[in-house]
Length: 119
Image (cartoon, rainbow, N blue to C red; front, side, top):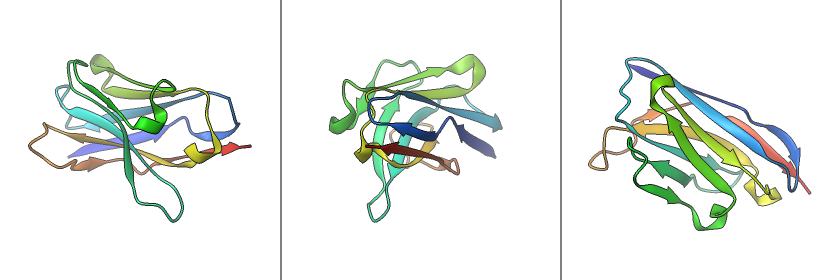
């Protein structure tokens, strides 16, 4: 069993920055592919960014490219999402998720952390 716990969300103004963290505990594996998803009210959950265990392949949602950076510290079993130049449309609950590889669906999920960006 793997537990994922997000932190770092909050209320900020447009243009501000936040860094989200997600720490894995319990039965962990540093080779897991990790990702950040978000869900805004009335919207479908969408993938924001993902990173392979080596960091060699990184995906970003088009709307966050150039503003968000995903990174990981495998020794700390932690994945980060550095968010800069935040916009009101970034407001959502952000979730971290993990899977062993792209042959699987994301099967480990955190409870989410709220990010609210005021205009």
